[in-house]
Amino acid sequence: MVIISNGERANSKLCIISAWLHDISLKEERELIKESIEDNHGIESSEMSRDFLVSLNLTLSEINEICDAINCHCFPNIQSTLTSKILWDSDKLNVFSREMEDDYLSNWTIRLGSMEKAKEQLTKERENYMKHFNTITAKNIARKLLTN
Image 1 (tube, rainbow, N blue to C red):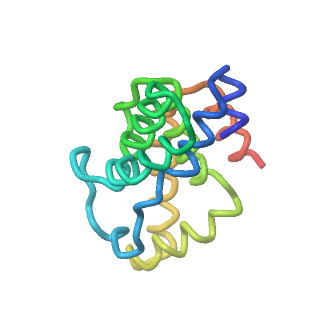
Image 2 (cartoon, rainbow, N blue to C red):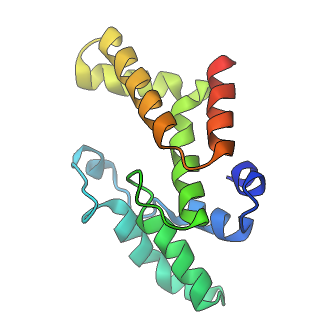
């Protein structure tokens, strides 16, 4: 998050706060529920965060920018601010992490029934995210993670 926000010359404070709060409404059982743009954990996390953000004495503009980023971090191509674009990119970069690869493959193997299908799914997911990254910094990080 910080590397992307610095690389994109964004407000790191807003990006970091949005990263801390973006999944606070996520529940384990929710993982299996199909989310939509109108009904997803980002919207719930944003609503849950607002009172806390007020307690931090942030400006209304800062609160709105953080909530907007949290609100739209679940789906590509709906981010309108630099903070929201960076949050989406940062959230999706974990799919490129070698440390997380075994977890993803295990999860997809259970869902799809074979390691071969799981590897195909992970490749598709990575290709999809690469197409939808909002920032050059995130694309460069993803490329570097894939070559390591």
